[in-house]
Image 1 (cartoon, one colour):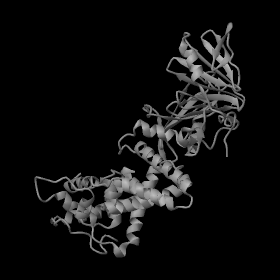
Image 2 (image 1 turned 180 degrees about the vertical axis):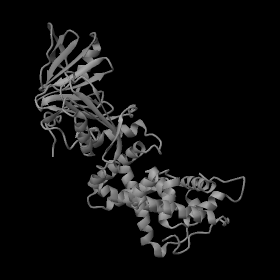
Image 3 (image 1 turned 90 degrees about the vertical axis):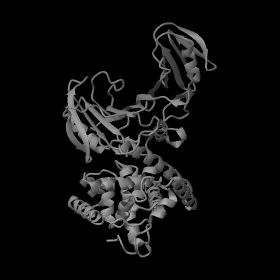
Image 4 (image 1 turned 135 degrees about the vertical axis):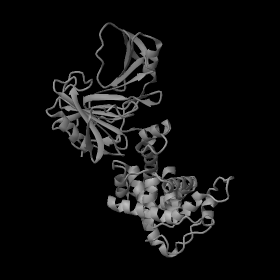
Length: 314
Length: 163
C-alpha cells in the first residue's frame, strides 16, 4: 500500500469516527412506522429486521466486534420468549426421511431418519441427516474445498458409526452451518445436495414441551406427534423429562407426593402423571434436587409436536 | 444499526445524508423482510441496498445537491482536535474523496474502508471486476494529482461528483 492509499485509508477511518448516534434514526423509523396502516406487522418485521441485522452483521463479518450474549439470546428467542428460532430449514432430503430430533442447547440441531427408523439417540449407525449451527468453524485442515450456494464450504467423508461412510459439509452463511449424512449410498453427494437446499427462515420456530427455571427444555425427539419425549439437564446434575408416554423404570416403586399429586420414586427417579403428561427426573444419586426438579417443571399447554415424524413441509 | 450508519457515513461523506439513506433503506427492508431474512447474508444484502440507495439518491437529488463541507460533519460529531498542526492531511484527502464521482467513491470506500476484494466490490456495485479496477485506478489518480491543501469549508459544488 503506497502513501496515497494509506492516506485514503486513514481519512476514511477518520470520517467513520463521525458516524452519528443511531438514536435519531431509530426514532424516525418508529415515527414513520406509526404512520403506516399496518402498524403491528411493520413494527414486528422492523424489530426482527434490526435484531437480525445486528446479529447477522456482527456474525457474518469479522470487520465488526463480536455480539454480546444477550444479542444472540434475543435472536434465538423471538415471539417474546414463547418459542425458539430454528432459523434454517432444508428444502431437499432423501426420499422417506422424516424429522425425529430437535436440539436447541445454545446451537440448533435437527435430525431426519427414514420413517420407522430408531432415530435419537443416534447410536445404531442407521441412516440419518443432521443439520445444525455451530459456534465456531471446525478445523477443516484436510477437508475438500467446495461451494454451497456460492459460499465457500468444506466437505469430508470418513468412517463413522455407520457401516457406510459419513459425510460432513460445513460452511458459513449467517451462521456457521453443518450437514452430516450417514448410512446412505454416496453420502457426500447427498450431504452437498442437502446443504445446497438449506435456506434461512426467520419465521421457523420450535416450541418445546416444558420450561425449567424459565428455560425451555433443549432436546425433543419422537416417532410421531403423539409419541415424543422432551428433556433437559438441570444444574448439570438432574436429567428432567416430559412425555405423553410413561417412563420404563426398573425396580420397586414407592409413593411420593410431588406437584400436589401422587407420584412415584423408583430408585433415583421421581415420576408423576400431570395433566396427561408424564414428568420424571433422575440423577446419579438421589437427592432432594430430583424432587425439586419435578416440582419446578412448567408444562407448555400445547407444545408443537406436529413436526415429529414429518418430512419436508411446504 | 451502527455498522450500517458508519458505512453510510463513510460512503456519503455526510452524516445527515447517511441517516436519511439508512432510514430509507431500513423502512424498505422492513416491508420486504420476509424475502431479505431468507437470503444467506441479509446484512450484506442490506448493505448493498444502502450502496444502491446512495447512488440513486444522489441521482435523484442531483439538482439540489450542494455543499459538502467539513463543518457539516463537525457539527454532528466534532472531531478530536489535532493539537500538532492546524492543517490535517486527512481532512484534505477527505475533501478530495468527497469530490470523486459517486461510483469511484463507493469503490474507494469498499476497498480501503471495508477491505473488500475486487470481486466483492463488483458484486456490491453490480459491475465487472475490470470496471472496479478502473474506478479505483482513476480515483487514486485523481487523489494523487490534487495534493494542494484546501482550506476547510470548501465543499462539493453543484453538479460535481455526479458522473
